[in-house]
Length: 184
Image 1: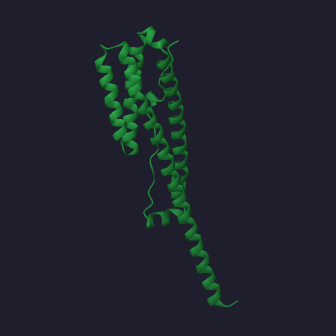
Image 2 (image 1 turned 90 degrees about the horizontal axis):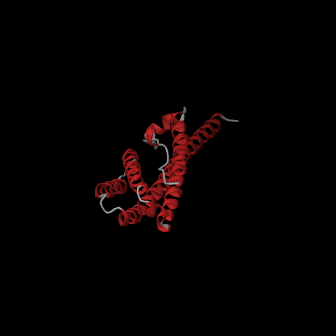
């Protein structure tokens, strides 16, 4: 085999290897974007349930104005959050506001017995589970992507093409318990 042919073959193999690394990073980055979209869908679903829940509780507890304002403000912050850190902060505020709302609801037995309220509780509980799953899926994709970025020689290629590590979606340690939606 001649030297020029060997050199050409080596260059071609190297180019294919670089191409494969680049494409792998693109796939991992797109998976993170897809997972983030899933989180946003579930957070939007949760936020869409909030007005119904507030209106149901309002019918029974008209004098709890501050609680309703806090929930509305938390929902607004969650809907306008863009980055992972903004969503994390808004998520914490929403969890605290919902806990206050459910604490108010505990004082009204007729409300807890309401079929509408029970249905909203169930939907909110299901949504909380979906948010937890979406968060886990997102963080798993971030782990794969960040791990790939840190491996040699991918780290060199990543730097050349401006691939940067992604943040995990984490909740405050104190706030990781699901929102309590049972009043039995």
